[in-house]
Picture 1: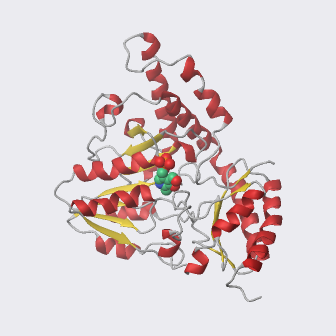
Picture 2: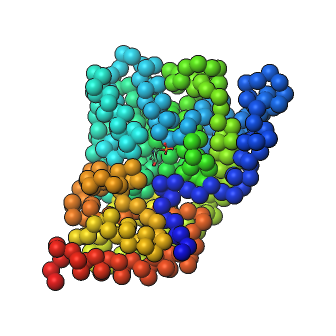
Picture 3: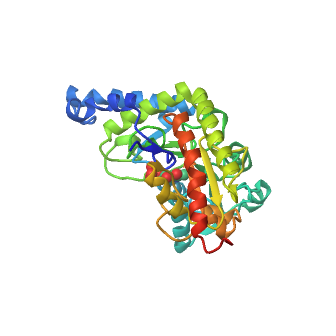
Length: 385
Ligand code: PLP
């Protein structure tokens, strides 16, 4: 059975072009970039090239980028590194809908004497910027707010948030793991100080990511030892991963507009057809300010996990809540923060598409979804027979 992969916010297929670019760095060009000999030393220029490819996608200077092992490391490093560099300020502002890579780190800070402010969101998953502005004071060290939500695709107005934060001695970090490669970003025109991205969300390899650190932003080193990454992040570089991530960014930069159009058209077709054909289905999240690839839909009175299992029987991969929280019986913290009722939050499914999805895959899923939903509703104790 062919796999239909609609779980691209969890991870993506490595692009063939990326894989080809990475291959030589395993068994042929396997030297250590820190070595004195040419065999190893020559690899340094490949890392420089990858840094330039990432910088071009983000609109920043290559010297502002630190390679990491992925989104989780970049988020942790940004938060702990920014706080260590500002010891006199003890308040952190974040939102209730962040990925656990941010939320868990922020909540842990409360055990170390920090004050944490978690901003709520409205029904559409959007923030109240006046509330944010009112929370910033002289004790605020860091504001960490995601660029786009992994579960709903809702995009926060980060550039506006940056304007509110600027000039107040506060560092602004954004977890842009879901945004990079899916929507255009231009850091040259923004006041974001720190930004996290992850290779495996944009058809690059797993285990490779970046932390962008705006020139002049104070950030303590987060891995000590060697001199790599300007002393900020010691450790022998993941050369194949970095080379692959660079190529993935180059591909994203070259194709982002046409891919967005294609992915959005397929996503809209899938979403509209499901909302029309399945009774008691509702879309979660701001319909307008949203990633072009994500649709989060709740089906009242049935369990998201049951829908997933039936989709799986047809070879269709989707997700309920975020991949990290599925498997637990708690409904998604993001949907709960948006005030989605329990009965609907339990029955939510996220479809996340990519450049590799086809019209046939969408049509097949459109055919199967009402059958699945009707079958499960027949079994549901909450639906009057
Ligand atoms: N932040 C967001 C918004 C994510 O969606 C994810 C992964 O799902 C992460 C961080 C973690 O990234 P990684 O898997 O590269 O550690």
